[in-house]
Length: 215
Image (cartoon, rainbow, N blue to C red; front, side, top):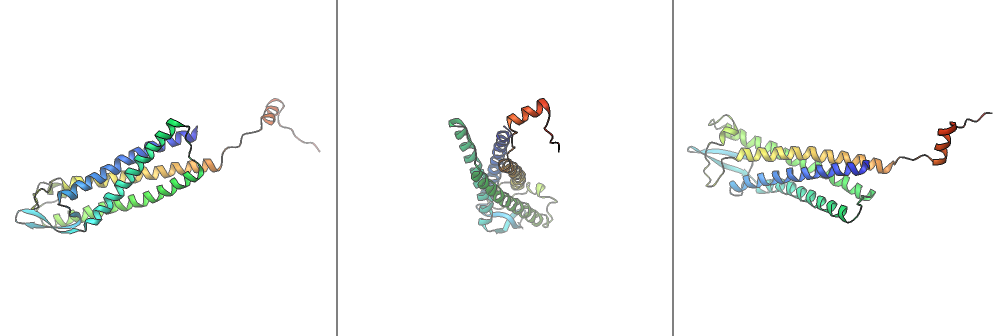
């Protein structure tokens, strides 16, 4: 019963991880699209008259990497949730030791890549904001959203979108760490199941007390 409860909590965490990964991927995709496919992370901004311009963007593959990691893990969580729902409907599903080891390995890899993505978003956004603030037109990136960009169609909410993607990635990291902890607890419980006492011995001890040998 304890293992079943742990699995249910794990599924709830995976559902939350799916939402965080989807939000991070969508927010960064929207931001990159507003810059006509250029990646604003670690970009350098310049002034073009009274407008901002992204003079030196990063390689698009950098944003694609973060989007791919977030989207792939979100898809993995969704498929895993659908699998467990389907399994619970047709039979009493139970994850064996091999499946648990595979899940542990996947969770550890997911933590590494989510941490990497969150750091890229954190330092990439900070680098872009520092470049904008150095132009002496604003004191913060939040205020810089009020300044128009030279690129037609560029959204003014670039910082809010990048900030949402970063926050979602950090929350996603915490969720995956909790998933790993639950899986470790389940693995230890599977490896060392409680040993029940023999019925005859326990009933005898309860009635007359444990037998003590006298020499």
